[in-house]
Length: 89
Image (cartoon, rainbow, N blue to C red):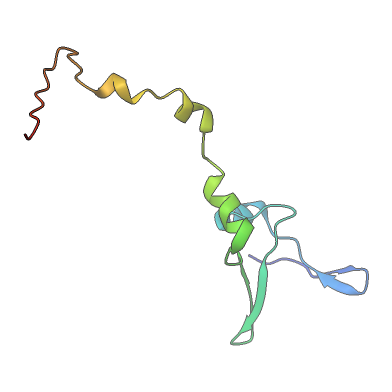
């Protein structure tokens, strides 16, 4: 895909087409890692660390659904169990 290099302050800028941004999973405001490899500019999502990694792991976590989960619903509880206790004398 051919794009045009533009001026942005004292820097050069390119626009990343939406289809490429969506494919990479990057959005406005995200940080990206720029490197040069074999005379090519490479744009990558950075490796997440620390709080950013934790935030991404918890992104889809739904605490409400966990709180409403009742494990006893999955147990076959009879409630009439007999327990024998023998005391060693």
